[in-house]
Image (cartoon, rainbow, N blue to C red; front, side, top):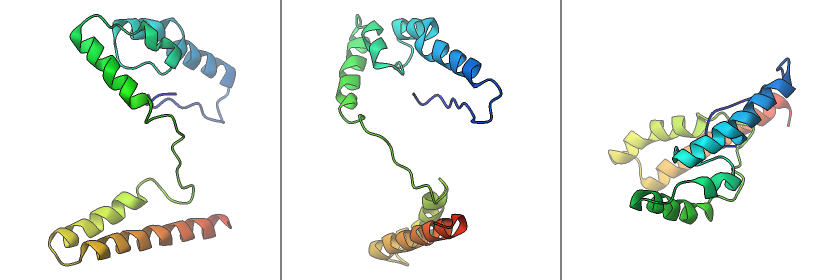
Length: 129
């Protein structure tokens, strides 16, 4: 729902109770109270009108939020065959040589692409895809 880091595991013993807590905290009275206080951006668009808009700062928050909403209405896609660290590890490994001029920018990009593609192929092989 939002960048809160909440997770309900498929192994949860009482998934309905876990969901009830999540739903109440993120969409019920606690969420409404946070929205009305101006504490962050609510996870539900239906709570946006409850955000305060009196001060100049609060009006600026609304202006920025409205500008961002048009850029955020999509599903973020992840590659299921690689870990979240695959790209950053390759980036870090190749960045210093690129900055020092040991490799060109094109070689920097090629190295990262090759390493990530290898990791994807390994991931597919491991799961038999």
